[in-house]
Image (cartoon, rainbow over all chains, first blue to last red; front, top):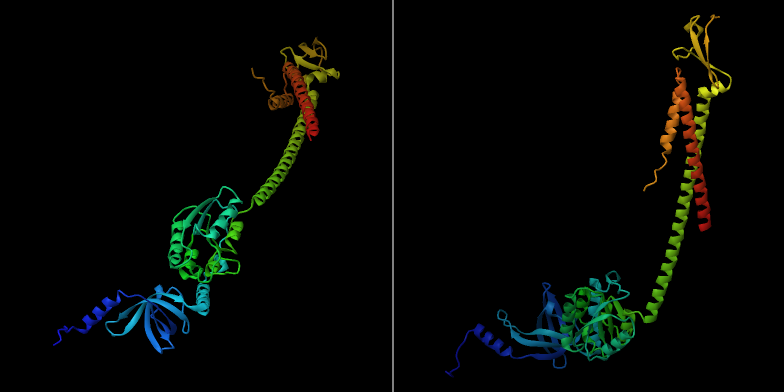
Length: 372
Length: 68
C-alpha cells in the first residue's frame, strides 16, 4: 500500500470542511434559482455564464443583508462547505453585495418595496420634532464634512441645546453595524428630544449603509424622533424613507431641527403681546364683574333700608293709633274705680262710690250720684 | 375698644312687641303710656340709623361712579 490511511466518509467530509474553514472567498456571479425554504433557509445558485459554471449557495434568511432575485449580479462573502448528509458542495454565505449599478438599484427597489409593505414608511408612524429641542443625539462621523456643516449651522441658531454625539463610521461595512449600535446607545439615554443621523454626499456605494435594512430598522426602533440628513438633495436613501423627518442635506437638517434666533424672538414677541391682551381682557372682565356685583349689592342694601323704614313707619302708625295718650288728646277720657280698674260699664259701679277720670292732662276724682 | 353695633332687628322686634301689647283688651294705662314713649324713642333711633345708612350708600355710589 502507499501508506495513505483509509478513513470513513464522514471523516473525509470533516477533514475537508476543516480545511475550508480557513478559506473565505468573495465571488462574483449572477443569482439563479433563488429560493427561501421553511421561512428561514435561503438557497440559490451563483452562475458564471461565460464559463458555464455554477456554485450552490446557502445562507440563513436572517443573515441576508440585502434582498436579491434571479438575474441580479452580486458578490458573496462565503466559505465553502460540504454537507455531511447529502455530500453536496456548497458555499455558506455571510454577506451579499450588489454588483454594478443595475443590481445596486434593483437591491434598493426590492428593499424599499419590502419595508414599505411592512409599514416602515407609513405616515401614521412619523413623529413630529419638538419645536424647541433641548437634548439632541447625533449619529455621524466626527471627521465627516456633513457633520461640520450641521454643527456650524446649528450653533448659529437656537442656543443652549445639548448635543450628544455618537461617532460612527458612515461608509464601509462597519457603518452597518456601528449605526444601529449608536441608536441602541442613544435609546438607553432618557430625555432625548430627537436623534439626527448625518452624512455628507457620496456615491451610491458610499451611501450603502443608509440603504441597508439594519439601519432602516434601527431608525424605526429609535425612541426619539429621527431626523435624517444624508447626502445631497438628489440622494434619497432607505434611511430617508424611514426617518420621521427627512432633510435634504446636513445643513438643512440643522435648519429643520432648530429655529433661528429671529424666529424665536418673533415667537416670544407674539406670545407676550398675546399674553398682554389676554391679561387686559381678563382685567376688564373682572372689573365689570366687580362693578356689577357692587351695583347689585348697593341695590339690595337700598332695598333693605327702604323696607325697614316702611316697616318702622307702619308699626309707628299702629302704635300711635293704639296709644292711650293719643286717644286722650283727642278729647276722650278714661275712668277707673278707686282701685284703679278701668270702668267699661255703669253696671260695674254703685251710687256713692268714688271714681277717678284721666284726661289728656291731669285727673279728676268724682262720686257717683246716680246711674243712668 | 370696639364700637357697639346697632341691633336693627332687635329694635324692630321690640317695636313689634309694643304694637302687640297695645292691642290687648285690658291694658294697664300707665304701662301702656310708658310703652308708647319707649316705642317713640326706639322708632327715632331706628330712623336715624336707617337715614345714616342711606346716606352712606349714596356716598358709595358716587365713589363707584367716579372710579369708573
